[in-house]
Length: 98
Length: 450
Image (cartoon, rainbow over all chains, first blue to last red; front, side, top):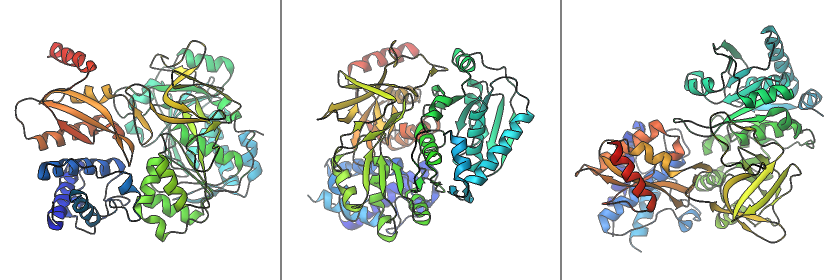
């Protein structure tokens, strides 16, 4: 199982790497409150899908578990786990502890 | 009643709203008149190809109408002039109209007039031409030529509407052109958001009390996930039309919960055959029925075939391989048949991948990746995704023992530079060998190439 701190670090590290790849330096300064999409500095739909794919790979390496972060369960939540960095980090803890 | 007559008749009603403010039908008519006078000064003695650069707005709309009215050939191109040298050369554009919101610049382009049979045929018919390009920022996007006069005529019977429409699809896309012409024909206002982010769209919808939102399931999915709905007043919204990719039933259910008073209508269209009129048998159903007198359809081996009055004459730079000799167009969409002549899109025939409603074939991605140093084998494929319908994944065999993270980033960066955004792989897997019959051929080709 991944702890909350580990999960947040995982998301921030991945977001920073994606920021460098996309030429969006603002993503390297992200924190728990950073919105993941919908605003200028954040990601478009393809960027968000890329982040999710990379995180799934990170989780596989860290825990040996193959997980799907974006599924109907995640999408049908009242508060989307993909809205903000801290929500995504919390969701990863939940998914990896199932 | 022709589109121009309608625009004149709607006079004081708002026509286009966006970052420029609100332009009325009367003001749009004046802009059309100004464009018409500029055109007359060019003293063109034959139908001529124009590149029309810009986004949805008063100036671009005025020129689209003026060029159609004068029987010229027009290629709407989003962005700026410097982005499109290949496309402008392909249509042998003689003039470029670079539009701002309400202003424009007319630039000559030195080229011989095209003698392509598709243009010659339109000239002989006395019809205007519309050229739209298939998506793609590199390689060779297909240039699709259609009879613009016939397309415009299909809007002559539209009923007036007071519901403001939002323009989500671009000025260079058949869906965006359809939204624009539909709005103008019905005397509604077309609301153009500052950009296509969820936030920008929702802001424009609330500000201009948008009544009709044409969108893709991917956009609607992101709209729900964004949380923007909780803080905005979108009670003016009456209709959401969706298309370009399959709608998951669960997503439609969530949308109906979020928008209980909104009518959901599935649309269907292709760049080759235009946007068809459809109806949904039940509000919760992902099935639809064609209700378009200008369109015939049939299902052959689970694939949807269409024949429409507004279909393209052909491609300037490609063979018509998806058109049968008798005019039927093979859409590549796999369908399920339901009761009472209803249909449901279930995916794509063959290996075509559909990301956010935009299609691609795996070979487009593979050909770019196989040229990257450090990659020896590659297989691209579509993977289901809850956000975008499908996404592009690639299996890569790397040479030696590289830093996989850097190679993954390099592969995606090169793909971003050479491919349209929906074609960039989101998942890059490193494997010891790739599978599949087609890959044997690719491996052989790669060895020969080296």
